[in-house]
Structure formats: C-alpha cells, structure tokens
Length: 97
Image 1 (cartoon, rainbow, N blue to C red):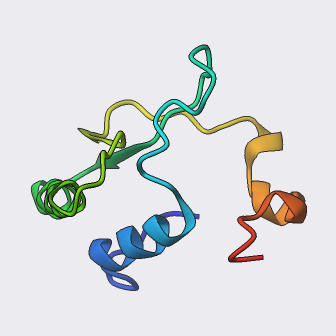
Image 2: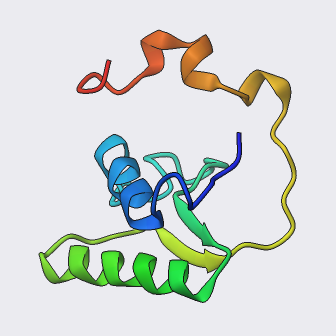
C-alpha cells in the first residue's frame, strides 16, 4: 500500500497516526531497542506540516521524541512485518482494538 495524497491529506494521515502512537515514547524503555519513532517526509509541504505538528505538541508541554526527517533510501520490511496489525490483532492499541 502506498500513500496517495489525492485520497487523504498528509495532515489527516498525521492526525490518525498520532491517535494510534505515542510520539513521546522515544526509543521505548530499552536503550538497545532497534525501533524509533520518526516521520519521513517526501515534500517540503509534508516537512512543514510535520514540523508544525511537532512544535504544537511541544508548545503544549509534551516532550516529543519523534524525529522529522526527509525520506531517504527505502527498503521494504520483511514479510512477517507486513500488515502487522492484521496478522497480530492482539497487538493493536487497546483504544483502537
């Protein structure tokens, strides 16, 4: 599945993502964790929207650890990571389950 801005705006996508994700969680509780929270942008407009979102979160007193970076080389995740929540319903966020 690929993002299609003609179907949903980047701001709307970011809002849904924020509702499903804790952008203040950082590198999880394990300092050796390989997972991090990031928003990778492909346009200057997306970068502006993401940075405005981050600034608004921080202005409200939240310590946001999510990085905003330009998208670079992209590699598809292994098959077992594809459609993770469809394959692992119990892993879904309780408020969205």
